Amino acid sequence: MFIHIGDDHVIQSKDVVSIIDHTLLSSSSIIEEMIFNQRKNKRVVETDENEAKSIVITKDYIYFSPLSVYTLKKRANMMTSLNRLEDFTDETEA
Image (spheres, rainbow, N blue to C red):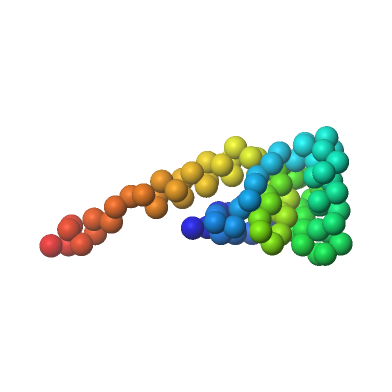
């Protein structure tokens, strides 16, 4: 399934490695170094720095999202719930 992460970006949920709060960026030298290296490789998709609330790390890219971690988690969980629903459309047409 897909998750809309803001700024017209839609990613596959299976590619998500981690979603972290943007405020953790300044408190972790490891995250800062990872993002610095990925920026050199042009694998960071950024939003306006003042708008970024979360960082979505996928297999190939790092996205700065204007949506909160909580909102992204709800969207991911909603898609999981929808996947579990059974399809009864054939039964209602009979």
